[in-house]
Structure formats: structure tokens, C-alpha cells
Image 1 (cartoon, helix red, strand yellow):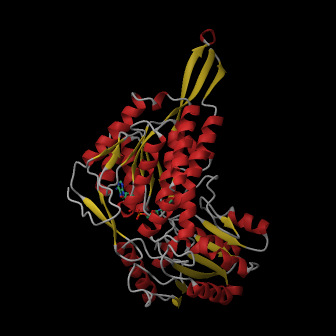
Image 2: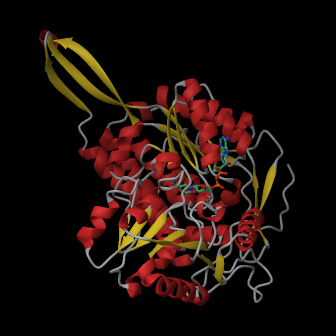
Image 3: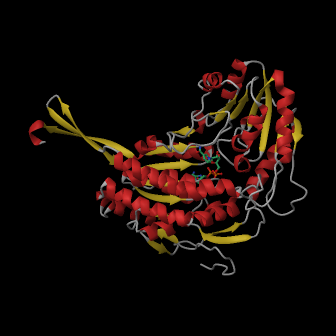
Length: 488
Ligand code: NAD
């Protein structure tokens, strides 16, 4: 395979069985920096044969290698070393991801820099405290109720929060005693191998964590591989549907973290300054390339004009530019394909009866990079495509509602059920309303993901939960060993 040696950040080998391994195929991906469109590095893309080698290594590490026989305390100690190795790289990793996908650096420091090490530590603590075997009296003696690792985990991740989304799978999997094949998305190929660098430094036994960047076809081969026990997937609802169907056919465990089209409900007593201060995380987080963004704003008729003006002004004042500049609040889209997708929705919005009140195109001042102006459409019918489909860019719609029941009806009028928020001066009223919204998470007067609480979607946004102590459950299987009293 020929790689252009003038490019700085090449990643031309896979991490399989603890060894940097030459690809069996020839396909590569040229990563471009989102803000400049300049080459960042080239990555090899895995073939079915590379995926097969990685799964076999993971299987061996579980069945023959030491990992399947480790105690929880031994795994926790390894995970803490892994966390230290990642923490030492945190600033560089966050910078790399921002260059790959355009994420503002402050957000990247939190989610790509600090969060992975934090999650490893959190699950190390939890597995040490967990009771993995319990003896219960039974009618004929006693039963040992065990919690065993689910087995070989295929972790498939998207490009928008590549580090934290991967670690949301790797950390509970390792804690439970599983082994992992991570398949990051080609768009964020380069940062995926930071896990391998850190795992090698921390002395993870060979095969416990394997990293192969690959496209969709090799991803499908990973999902279907006969030696995989569980698929942990984050990505689009379209891909999730295919993967879920295949897992159903194979009776294979899976968690699916999928798309969203969430609503921010502004109640008539809301403090608009609080709402505007929360817009960044709630509605525009990561340039709108966040699964939980509340890209539909529902405003009471009594304060409709006020809300529209406040959101439009906020969008106009967002600072576009290099995501590595801490003053920048909106970076570029992660890829040309993503830019084209968002621009397509802007055209749809303009062609609808909606009223464009901010943005609406590409910023004239930025000729390089995949930038889109933060855009606000008002007077949007909730059944319009721009209010129903995930745009995944800095684009929000505003829809008026008559009363609380109407607001709840509109919020739930979506195939998705991932995030949301309620803005009100009365938190009890907000909580009562939040309980009626069918989403996996919802914020009161702010929205920020809590890594200590279960996270995931209802309806078309997915199956299962990640994060929090609850996520360990999906990497463990119960086994009941019936034993007579005399044997124990
Ligand atoms: P995507 O579905 O195109 O790809 C995600 C990953 O799956 C990539 O690694 C891709 O190569 C792989 N893939 C795609 N099709 C596959 C198949 N049939 N079999 C196996 N692997 C396959 O998604 P994307 O464009 O990379 O990411 C954006 C999407 O991810 C958005 O819809 C967003 O809402 C969603 N997302 C969800 C969450 C969540 O937690 N619910 C978090 C982040 C992103």
C-alpha cells in the first residue's frame, strides 16, 4: 500500500492482538481538516479479512488469554492504567478531533479529552464494588447466581463525538470482562488509534481491545461475524435499523444509540436570558452535530415573537471560525457530505412556508472549510420535513403552541425520542411536563449530558441505554448454577 509520506498524521496499520498489523486490503481514507479542507492524514480502511483477524484476536483473549479469567480488581487496575495513559494524551486528542470534525475546542476538551479517562475510572470503581456472584437459597438447595461477561463486543461508532462514544462502550465492556473490536468511522479515523496507543502503553493484554477503522461494508461484516456476541452501535437510525435486523436474525445482543429530533419547550413563565444562555448546549451543541440537539423550539403563542427574536439574535451572534480558537462557538461541518446534506435542508426550509429569520446559507467571510451559518426558521409546521428529519447542523425551527397539552403533543410528534428540554420559572411545573415527554433524557432549564446517568433513546432513537451504572448490565449475562445445599 502506498501512503503519501508528506502527510503528518498517517495511520496505516490496525491494532490487532496487541500488535500494529498491516492491512490485508489496499483501501485508504484521506482525512481532511474540516476548517481548512487541507489534508490531515491518511488512514487504512479495514476489509472483511482485517475485521475477521480482529474478532478472532478478541475471541482468543476471552477464551484462551488471561482476560476471561481476571478478577474484577485486576481488570479495574488495568483500566486505571489505561485511563492514565489516555489522560496524558487528552489535550492532543481533543485538538485532533476538533481538526477532524470541527468540534469547538472547549467541548472537545470535555468530551474527547477528559471524558474517556473519566469513564474508565468510573467503571473500574463500579466493577470493584459490584457483586458478580450471589448464593441464594432454593427449593432444593441453593443456586449460585453469576453475572458473566457477555463475550466479544463489536463497538461501532460515528464521527461526531468519536472518543466519548467509543469509551461509553469500551469501559463497561472491559469492566464486565468482555473483549472489544472497535470500528471507528472513517471521518474520524485518526483519533481512533489513540485508544490503541494508550492501551499498548497501559499493558492491556493482547486482543482485549482491537481497533480497525473501516467503512460500512466491513462494519456489516463485523456485525454478522459468527464470533461476535454483542453489537454496541451508535449512529444513524437508518444504519441502526439494518444492524438491529441483522442482530435479530442472529439472536445477537445489541444496543442501538440512534438519531434524534428533539424539542426545547419554552413555557410562558420562562426566563428568556436563561434560555438564551442554554441555547449553546441545548440547541447548537457541536455546530448542531449532536444527536441530542433540540433543533425544534416550541414557543407559547403568548410570547412567540419574543422567543423568535431572542433565538434569531443568538444565532446571528454566534462566532464562526476555526474550532481550535476558544472564542469560536460554531465550527464547520465534519465533511463535505455533511455540508451538502445541511445545505439541502436549508433549501427545503426556504421552499416551505417557514420564515427564515437568521442565517440560511454559507458564510460569505469563510471561503475555506465546510461552514454553515447558524440558521433559524420560524413559523414552522411540525409536520414539515425540516421539523421531522435530523439535519445535523446549526439549524433550528421554531413552532408556536397553544397550551401545555399542545406543547407535549408537538414534542412527542416525532419518530424519535432522544433528548429535550423544558424552560420555566417553576421547576415543579417543568418536571411534571418533562414526565410527559417520551425521550430518554430531558433537561430542566439547561441541557448537558450527565455521564453518570443512563443515556439513550425511546422510539426510533434506539434500544438500550449507555452510561451510568445501568450500562454495565448490557455487558453481563446472568447464569444460574443450581447446586444442592450439600455442595456449597
Ligand atoms: P452512520 O450510521 O452513517 O455511521 C455510524 C457508524 O456505523 C460508522 O462507523 C459507519 O461506518 C457504521 N455503519 C454504517 N452503516 C453500517 C452498517 N450497515 N453496518 C455496520 N456499520 C455501519 O452515522 P454517522 O453519520 O457516522 O453519525 C451521525 C448519526 O449518529 C446521527 O444520526 C446521530 O444522531 C447519531 N448519533 C447518535 C447518538 C446517540 O447516542 N443516540 C450519538 C451520536 C450520534
